[in-house]
Structures are given as structure tokens and as C-alpha cells.
Image 1 (cartoon, rainbow, N blue to C red):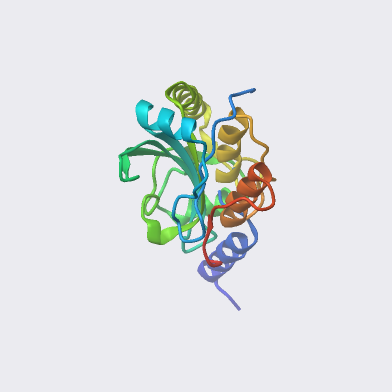
Image 2: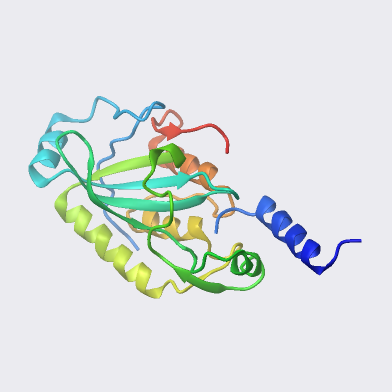
Length: 211
């Protein structure tokens, strides 16, 4: 028979195995996505490319990453340099405000305090499981960032089934005029579905191997 400690670990593993990461009208921006090797797709209108270069190549990237559990969903936003590298990117995603496993377990039953900043591994490409990058004009970028700031200020709790990291990122996408999938998908599935819903069945983007 398992002791109390063993039962707690069992419940934690079971909960993490079955649930997705822990979740307005707007301007729908120009989209530049990536192929399956992570390279920028060709064919964007030349006028859009010229405008983006002139205004600093602003972007937002909807991304999921691998983790020891089911992964994490978040956004990265900022500017790109001429080589397409991020310049001082900012990250925002919803997760329990702790490094302890206990709030993660409790968060499958009740809301737990959350944080909305970067977490370990968010900016490392080797952990990226799926992504969709959207290029923005300066005005569009400012609107999106303003919304993210407001969302961060009011997002104080994480709960696995009602408001998790998917739901948080979905609010950002919805504010930009995009359709969003259900928030109970695994993070990699969520980002892939988000890209497909708004770019069509043949949308080009990055999806890695199942984690």
C-alpha cells in the first residue's frame, strides 16, 4: 500500500498526464510564418516587407515549448534585426508563481497564484515544440503590447481546466482578430491548431516532434 507521500506523487503524475498546460475586436496583422525547418516562408508582399523593414520589423510569436510535464504556451514579442534575430524580446505567459510542484497539483482543482512573465527555456529554440510568428506594423505592435500589458495586470490566477496558459495566449490572439481553439489541448497541439485555423489547412509553420 502506498504511503501518503507516494499517493501525492501518483496524483501529481496522473493530473499532469491528462491536462493541458497551465489557458475585443482588433487589427488582423500581416502574417509571416515559418516552414518546418524554422526558416521564414517566402512570398510575402513586397510592400509589406518594405514597410516592416522601415518600421523596425515588429513581431509577435505564439509559441509552445517542451517541458518535463505537458509543456507550456506563451508569446514572444519585440523587433527583429536585419538578420532576422530577435532584439531584446519580451515573453509573456501564464503559469503558477512557484518552482514547487505542490501549487501545480492544487491548480488542477482550485485557482492558484500566477505569474505572467518568462519561464526557464522559453527563448531556447531547442525546447520549441511549435510556433507561429506574425509580423506587425509599429501601430499594430503598439496595440498588441498595450493589450498584453492590461492582460498581465488582471491575470492573477492559474487553474488547469478554466484558465491556463493556452487560455491566456488565446485572449491575446483573439484581441488581434484571430480565431482560437479550445484551451484544453496540449500546448503543442494548441499552437499548431491556432496557426492552422488562421492560416488555412496548408498554413506554413513550425511543429516539432511530439514531446
